[in-house]
Every structure is written in C-alpha cells, then in structure tokens.
Amino acid sequence: MLFYIKGKLIKKSPVHAVIDTGVVACMFQISLNTFGRLPDQGDVRLFTHFHVNGNDFSLVLYGFVEETERDVFRKLISVSGVGPNTARMVLSSLSVSEIRQVIATKDVGSLKRIKGIGEKTAERIIVDLHDKIAKGSELGTEIIAPLHNTQKMEALAALSSLGLDKTKTEKLLDRIVIQNDSLTLEEMIKQVLKQI
Image 1 (cartoon, rainbow, N blue to C red):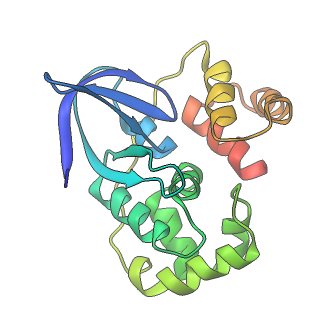
Image 2 (tube, one colour):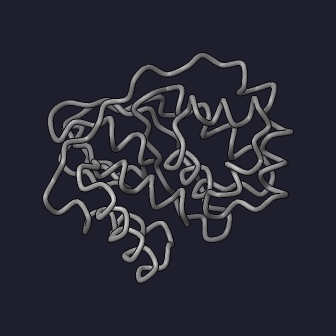
C-alpha cells in the first residue's frame, strides 16, 4: 500500500494534482483544503489513499497534504452511504478542525449544507464518528492560495467538476465576487459550497 508519494508538482487545480516522481507521473484527486496548501510548483509530498470503484473497478488515487486530512477522509468513507466523492466534498467545504467541531457539537445543519449530504447521512456521520474524530488534535493555520486573475473561471470549472449546476454556480460566484472581490480561489469555492 502507498503511504505517501514525493515528487515535483507539475500541475494542480482545485480538484486534482499531478506529481512527477521521476519514474511516473501520478494524478491525485484532491480536496479544496489540499489545493490551498499546495505550492504552485516545486517538490511536494502527498499522503495517499488508493480507491477501487466497486461499480466499474476503476482505480482512483486521492492525495492529501496532511496525514490528518487523509485519516478523516478514511473515517468518512467508512460511514455507510458516504463515498469518496462525498468525503472529498466534505473536506472541500470544511477544514479538518471544522469537521471535528461539527461532529463534536453534533451540528447536523452544517453537514446538511454540504452537497450530497442529507439529514440521515449527516446524522449517521455524527453517530458513527463522534468518538473517532471529535477528540482529535487540531490542524494549524492553513496556507492561503495566491490570488489569480482567472480565479472565477477556475472556481467555476472546479465546482462544475464536483457535479454542481454550472449556471446556478456562476450566478452564485458573481454575487460572491460583488460582495468581496479580494477572496482567494479557495475561499471563493468554499463560499459557493456553503450556499448551495
């Protein structure tokens, strides 16, 4: 089993990253939190989770800047009804420390606001993970991604690839930018995910 992969970051977007190990280039599905903590280029290390899709037996590699985030991802997918894409959506909407807070305080409402999570799934996550996650240590301050001129289009592409309606998402992004034009790409995407 792969524990982590080190190499040169050659491409990243809010939903995936490509690392050249010198032998092979690996594409990782990533959360928005990991995206925000990755540099624009250079040597990186991603903790890995290798997932086999039961429907078509396709293989997907997930990557996380912090081992703690991978651990939360694995705990989330252990909950009945929560697959890797839903777990990634949770980790894109909330930081690890926010997830712990939501579970510790049994805040069903905050989980229900995340795309793909209904009330029953939110309750199941809290019941199944309360003792496993709520008592964990907190992550440090997150590194904010640099601002780019094309960030609205990048945000729209990332959110569309997560399955959000493009027209509705674009309208939300326009409203968010009007309210605060100094948001980073990561913050912009999080704002949309909280309002969907």
